[in-house]
Structures are given as structure tokens and as C-alpha cells.
Amino acid sequence: MRVGVLTGGSDCPGLNAALRAVVRKGVQEYGDEFVGFRDGWRGVMRDETVTLDIPAVRGTLPRGGTILGSSRTNPFQEDEGVERVLGTLARHEVEGLIVVGGTATLGIAARFAEEHGVPLVGVPKTIDNDISLTDYTVGFDTAVGIVTETIDRLHTTAESHKRVLVVEVMGRSAGWIALHAGLAGGANCILVPEQPFSVQRVCEWVESRFRATYAPIVVIADSALPDPAEIALPGATPLPGSDSRVRLSGVGEWLGKEIERRTGKESRTTVLGYIQRGGSPSPFDRWLATRFGLHAIDAVHEADWGAMVALQNTRITRVRLVDATASLKTVDPELYREASVFFG
Ligand code: F6P
Image (cartoon, rainbow, N blue to C red):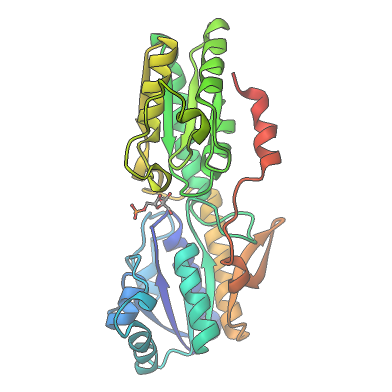
């Protein structure tokens, strides 16, 4: 069978592990030939391919990034994008396509499957862990590990200087990285986009932590925002940016200054940014990506088009791409409440 493969959206650790598993099983057990598309949907649109065979994936299990490259190109928003994608797939006689991506890339895949009958299967990846119907996505565990290690390190320097340390982490519209790493690293306050926060309350937690003679660590997701009612109060410092609701990154710096202004405690902010996405995948991500890859190529050979492989209660299952991409998986308020016992 001729199988096309692409990785789209923001990169994350574990993508190569998934590609390696797809190719190893495809070639060894099914006798497949692969066409690697460069830079996500853009490569399919432009007919740009990369050799994808067993030698190409050898040694890539621990390697971060993606050997195929990635982009956020959406063919549905490009001139004749859809026709060009269909043309490329026909030219290469692709009989099945494996799409490794996050919510946007997989959403595009769902449309190609539904509206144009493209035979494809999805693999969920993103450090944000916000894809529905799978417990975890490839890349999330590595990001949580990196943030946790950072929090551990920040505890010691915060203690030495009796400072507040604010750590801003990624997550887009979901607070999964903040919640998991905040719990694992013993943060004194975790702020997620799903729950508008009270700056007043954060300052109270900071002060109570100092009273217990420890320096506080505040973990904030890059799209977490204060309660708009509180921020509109006279004397409050406005958030940076004209439309702060769509702003990603910057809120950590703002909060650090606001804490310092209100409590008089010296504050510093660390923005982790792309460090969370770079480098080698954790053992769990290698395991998850490998198993997703093995199951994805099986789904191709069973012609289970429109399926997405998923992790549900330790089992690899299949769900429908349309369902998985219909809405984002966000932090359950109950989970957040559970973590709040450690705040302050
Ligand atoms: O989706 C993963 C992610 O890292 C988000 O957490 C972040 O907001 C976004 O990608 C940044 O993407 P870009 O690579 O386009 O800057």
C-alpha cells in the first residue's frame, strides 16, 4: 500500500517516535511504501515530499522536533488549497494518509475525510493536551517534566532571596500543563485559563506563604486571565495589549509586577516558552507515540478512515476525528478544585 504521512501544527517531542513506529510496522509487516510530506499540509499543497523509509527513521526515537518539518498551513484558507491537496495525493497514488497533529491540523484532516472522502487516520499530538477523547496527547508528558524540573529549581532560588517567582507556561486555551506541573512541582498557586483568577486572592496566598516562612511559586498558563470585574476596579493596572483576551504570553510578567505592587514583595517572572516543546521526548511520550504509530498503521490497513488513535484508560482505542476535534478538552473544574488544597 502507498501511505502518505505528515506532521502539522506546532512541533513537540515524540513526533519522530510516532513516524518511526508507523514506518517500521508498515514496511516490515505490511510491505508498505511511504511518502513523507514536508511541513504539514503545506507540503501536500505544494507537492513537497521527503524520503520516508526505515533508514530515514533509524535513530530518531529520542530526537525532538519532526524529521518531516511542520507548519500551520490550512489548505481550506489557501487559493485552490483543497484542489491542490487532492491533486498531490492522486499524483502520488496515496491510498491512505496518516496525519499527526493537534486540534487545527486534525480538524483539517476531519474535513478532508468528511467532505472530500480522503482516506486518512489521525494521531493526536500537542504539548497542550487539549484534544478531546484521548487521555493524553504526544508531547504533553515531556512538557510537564520540563516545567516540573523548572519549578523545582525556582523553589531554591525563591527561598534564598525570599522572592515570589511567577512561572508562565504554555497551554493555549487549556490549563493542563499548568495544573499537572504545578501539582508535581508543589506550586503555591496555579492559574489556568478555564478559571478567571482574583489577583487579590493570589496576593493573599503569596502573603500567607511568606508568613509560613516559605517563598511562593505561582504557576500561570499563558492564556489565564484575571477576573474582568476585578481588573476594572479603580487603581488596578491594565493588562498589556489592546485585546488581552486573545493575548498569549505576557500575563506572567504583568502578574509578577501586580503582586509586587500590591504586596511589596519582590517578584520575578520566568517565561518558559519554546523550551517546553524542544528536545528529547520523555519515556512516556516515546511509549505513547510509538503505540499510537503502531495502531495508526493498523487502522490504515483496516481502512478505518476518519479514525483517530487515542489513549483511554491505558488502552489504545480509536475514536472519530470529527468527534475529537469538535471541541477542546479543557481542565475540569473539579480537578482544579482538588489542586487548590495546596494554594497559599
Ligand atoms: O499548541 C502548542 C503551543 O506551544 C501553544 O501552547 C502555544 O500557544 C503555541 O503552540 C505557540 O505556537 P507557535 O509555534 O505558532 O508560536
